[in-house]
Image (cartoon, rainbow, N blue to C red; front, side, top):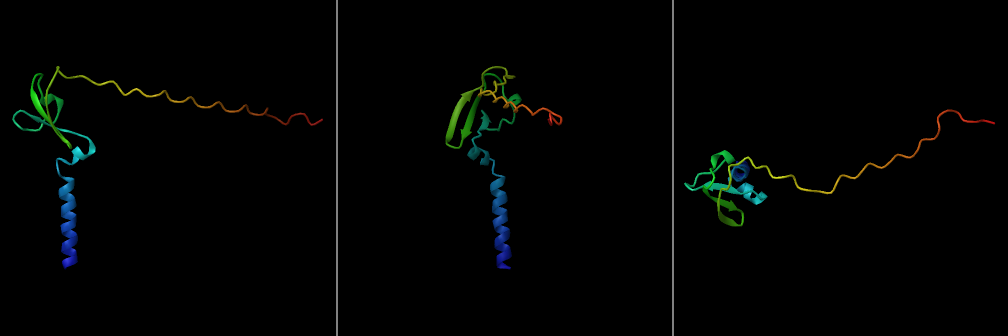
Length: 99
């Protein structure tokens, strides 16, 4: 019975950790809190000029929302995809000259 209870407790701890709202910070994301302390869940929750707090894994930074939204950052520039190599010329079809 003790082993079963230990396993159950271990599983509950894993579940608790997976539901931790600060877990995404470890993956490089930030939590955005409005001036009243509530989470901003989308860009539409924020108005131009509104003060927010950005919480990162390594600490907090204050910021002010700029603009009216709708800004889509350009995709990152990368090297152009390599061109496929040309296939070698196929030998002529048919039986060819036997004599």
